[in-house]
Image (tube, rainbow, N blue to C red):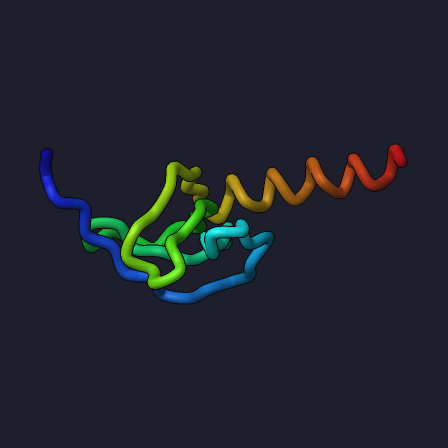
Amino acid sequence: MAEVKYEIIKTIGELSESPKGWKKQLNLISWNGREPKYDLRDWSPDGTKMGKGVTLSTEDLKALKAIFNQMDELN
């Protein structure tokens, strides 16, 4: 398996923390030297391990925001 290289450009926010210290974060990350994208996943307390997550382009994130805004209008 090829090594995955990443650079956390900016931490946008933290959603939650598990009892073991893993944090679910939204970050702007460059994967393998590519253009940075928004990424939502769990990170170990020391930041060296990661869980499964989802990576979103700016357009994807805007579409998700619009969906959340619609949900707020319904409630």
